[in-house]
Length: 390
Image 1 (cartoon, helix red, strand yellow):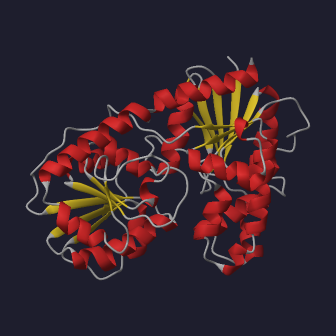
Image 2 (image 1 turned 90 degrees about the horizontal axis):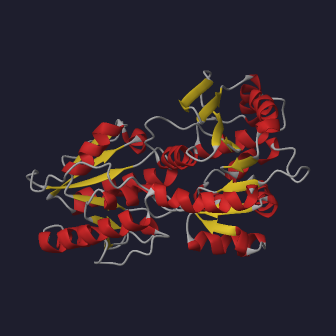
Image 3 (image 1 turned 120 degrees about the horizontal axis):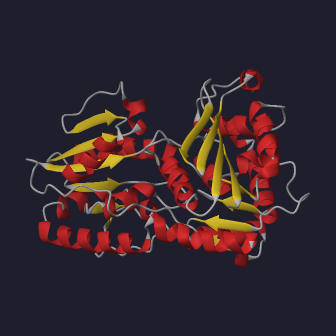
């Protein structure tokens, strides 16, 4: 079997729960049916190790070393913030870190090197100096996303460096996977690269991974939102708590995931419940019990994985355009479109129209399950990777 080495600035999890870990795990679990796959991931803690998922799929989770603490001290900033966690990864590449040592030991036996983001590009000192193919399997247009959501002034001073890293990766990669046609166009235009080497690899789902829906089980309409502790998700939770909860008093709002953390000390509202992080089995149960899903996203890039999960699970979805970006969904056919100015009124008007919502949910579920299964996505990716290897 040909060997794939994958570099990423965060580890996966089993079972995966957040959007990033879902994409990271399922793509390479499926590719490991055809290739020998090694993930090389940077952990957030001091414990690492080698984890075997199958005979052809493993992950080296590299622990933080002393250079990490030195960079945090030099930056004089809290490393737990989203922006600086990424900046630290780019700075680490300048030092002889544990991650760099692992890469150098695994590199010689690999047939292709895949980058999951531009933030670790400088670890790959062999790029364009060898004959091994390089692939950029993008989760987002990272520069465009950073330009949208990085708020800290000092962090924004690194935006030119993010631009250069992603531009170099897109231009030097033999193959780029983009999550949507929109981002494919943006990559080509922003970095002046031949669009023919950019192929689509959207986020996906397992259509058979859901429980049967429990309609009519709640006294009041139960609206569900789930998300990781990630700035666009936190922004959405703030909007739910500060606006939707007050404007839709006859509805209950259930919020799960790391996005609850910034609101743990906020005053409680009678129709809002914050669950915090939930296990995979609990998430599946919540998706079956909710009456509707809401996705009031106002910033972000790539394809929103929670949107795919909501629809595949058969839940009627209310979402902004940003929340369904890149999926070619049609308002009132696959979901109910709502924006910040009218989200509450759309909820109040349509949440009780059960006939409409059943039809919308069924069409949305059929559309997503047909076009966005991980197995079909990875089958197309394999075809493109094979062109580089054979």
